[in-house]
Length: 224
Image (cartoon, rainbow, N blue to C red):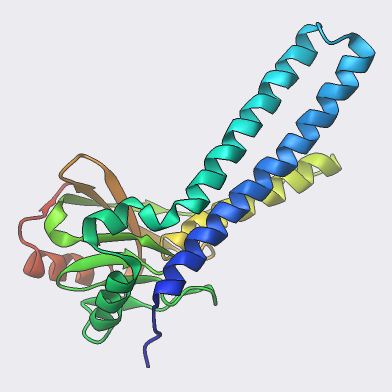
């Protein structure tokens, strides 16, 4: 039985990713702000270090505003203006899951699936706004990635930082429809505007997926 994608699934994903970014900016801004006040009171508000920290604090503020605006305007995401609103896309995805060209179940319980390819479109389940119709893609090539986690030990701060960085990397890979703990390949498409779109396909499935892509979308050129 296939999972069901709804309009709320799209908005929940968009809100979740943006809320995470807002939290990260707030934490970073709080640390930078504390350091700026400390340096300002100890070294003077006209010291070079204090001024650099204040500039960074201003950048954090600008990023915070940008992410908040992005959260408010998530219904105006680019994919909705091109392919239809969240409800329409959810219907297309649900219909596509009934007769997929390629379907990989997700590794994250929050995702309806990992990667879905139909004779009309391709989409990642953890990043539904990655939806692209095959007619808009012009080239494809593959890339193999082996994920390795690197941890810094000795310094508690560096250790915590490396763990966070690795988790961010894992989350990004999962958003492309792959399990960061297994070997996988990437389908890297280029659209009419020269923008790249990346999707994960399990290594053992890649050859079969490429053959099927050639059959359903012969206009897409394979680049070696």
